[in-house]
Amino acid sequence: MKAFPIILGIESSCDDTAAAVIQNRKILSNVIANQKIHQSYGGVVPELASRAHQQNIVPVVNEAIKQAGINSGQLSAVAFTRGPGLMGSLLVGSSFAKSLSMALNIPLIEVNHMQGHILAHFIEDANESSPNFPLLCLTVSGGHTQIVKIDDYFEMEVLGETIDDAAGEAFDKAGKILGLDYPAGPIIDKLAKEGNPDKFKFSKPKVDGLNFSFSGLKTAILYFIQKEVKENPNFIPENLNDLCASIQKTIVDILMEKLISASEQTGITQVAIAGGVSANSEIRNRLKEMETERNWEVFIPKFEYTTDNAAMIAMAGQLKFEQQEFADLSSKSVAKYKI
Ligand code: KG4
Ligand code: ZN
Image (cartoon, rainbow, N blue to C red):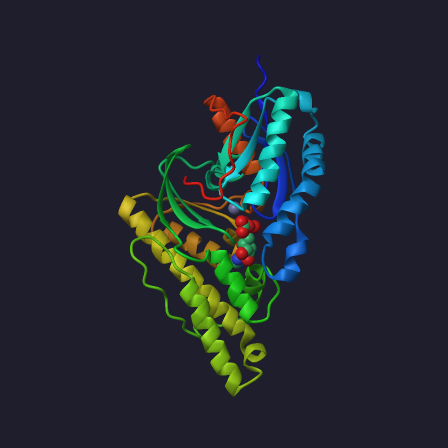
């Protein structure tokens, strides 16, 4: 029997250097080097990110190959993130992938990072069972907010996306106003558990169709806090849990409202979520509620496959390998890349 192809995936679009090995939808290794360096800046610094990728890429790929229990000669192809992302970061991954494909004389596969987030759902152990088509996916992270309709692995249509900040950015920027560390999303989630989500009301943006906007919310929070702190300098510490719960509820309300509209408009009830914000307990609870309220089938993948990772790039790479869809050495990284 012919052995299944073994694909190496490389992800370097933002601040994580990652490599993973997949065979027949099974992840053999999934290695990631987070760049802690950005924490003190309150966000990703592109120049520092590309330098850190250069330091990390060789050890991360070596580790992925080692943990997979293979040698590089057994690889059938190398897949990498072509975009979207930070140009300096993308270039490190793509140049490395090209060199490796030349050295090993194996095909090169380019992957759209946003498609990768979605295709992660098809990794063998991502969910209890894999979704079918058609499927809706809400991809929400520090860099993305999109609702995508998926008719087949590579037949995707963006139904709506943010016109300014991403949902994770909204969490992070709100957290910054409250004096929380970066990334603030997980901290807000934790503090919100002890808070009253209805204590403070923030107006929601009016955006046409299935698009999102979060920059107005950030400004509304900033002005509100500035006003309150002027009257009571202890306003933030005295109300921190309620503030977090109210901000979280507002962001999740905005996301859920559009996701429900997308499901109503398309008639699709298989709904997936991807991206770092999918860790949020409020969004998870609300999605679960939809299973009974609206008969949705909800897919929330394992956390390691939903934040930026290379397993999703390897998975997309495997699917492209099956279709024999290869790139050549003239492949160019792209900061903006439509699904
Ligand atoms: O996917 P990811 O690790 O990286 C990219 O941004 O691509 O997502 C990181 C984002 C950050 O904005 C972080 O604050 C947010 O996901 N995040 C959360 C939670 N965990 C991570 N936001 C809300 N609640 C969480 N539990
Ligand atoms: Zn991402």
